[in-house]
Length: 208
Image 1: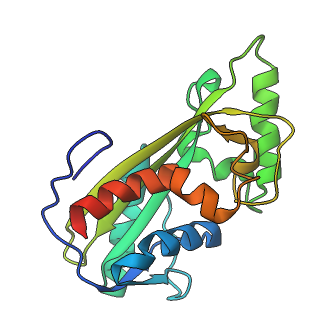
Image 2 (image 1 turned 90 degrees about the vertical axis):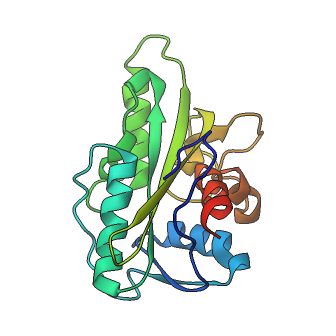
C-alpha cells in the first residue's frame, strides 16, 4: 500500500480485463475511465452492475475508499477500484472533508454545498481561502487484498462559482498556479491536474 510521496511497493499487479469502478457518481466514473483508457482495463461501473452503495462509515478518505472497493469486489467477483475524495478547507478545520458529498444533501445539490462553504467562510473574520482536494484510491480483489494510493491538489476558493464543467465543488476551486477554476476547464485540461490524477499516477506506477 502506498501514500503520496512514497515509492509505490505494490504486492500485486492488476491484469488487463474488467475492473469495477465502485462509484455511482457519473462524473467520477468518466474521469476514471479516461485515466484507465490506455492500460487495457475494461471499466464497468457499480451502477451498471446494480451494486448497492455502502454506507461510508470510515473516518478517513482511505477507510471509506477501502470499504467501497472491498464490497464491490466481494459482490462482483472482480477486482474493484473505489475513490473517496473531498474538499478540505483550511479555515474550516479541514471541513467538509470526508463529508463533502453529504454537505450537498440527499439531492446531491452541490450548489447548496458550495453556498454552505462560502457562508461558513464569510462568518470568520479575514478567513484565508486556502483549500485542497484529497483523493484516496483503493484497489481491492475478491480475496480481500487491497492496495491504496492518495493524491492531493492545492488551491484557493473563489466566489461566486465559475464555470459549467466538472462536478461537485469544481466551480469554486482555483488550483494553484492556474487562471481557471476546475469548473471552467474542459475535461481534458482538468483531468491531469486533479487530486485523482495524482493518486492514479501512483497506482499506475505500482500495479499496471
